[in-house]
Amino acid sequence: MVENLPFDEGAYINRSPLFCGLNYQFWKVRIKIFVESINRGIWDAITNGPFVPKLEKDDVFIEKPWSQWTKIENKKDQYDCISNNIITSALNSYEFSKVTHEDTIDVKRERKHALIQEYEMFKILKGETILDVQKRFTHIVNHLISLGKIFEREELNIKILKCLDKS
Image (cartoon, rainbow, N blue to C red):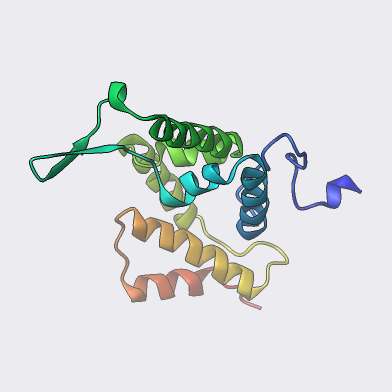
């Protein structure tokens, strides 16, 4: 029964729902309910971004030194810390590594090489529908484009036509 549910872990009231890369809309609703059940200020920290107390000095706003923060500013900062803890704890290890390392040059290069290999070896899988093939191919191509690879339309057309079954 439990194995049929759309989540592996995290269906507890005292542990954040685990996001495993699938069904984001479902997870988003669950994480919002979970966070708001702890404190709505934490959900505000998630939706509004990090809180940085500012100090006006000569018509310019600068970051306020921590020693000068008020109790309210400390509380808002605490909400930021709690929200970071909840969100990072809600990611499985694969999703966490994608978020924390996605901008490093080495990771981008490795990802690009893996996607290029996947693109070059692309073929229709047994029993795969044309819609599934198109989704998988588009996914690979879009990721490669986002990593800086440039494709000619003709190249993409030839690639997809070559992998089609001859029957």
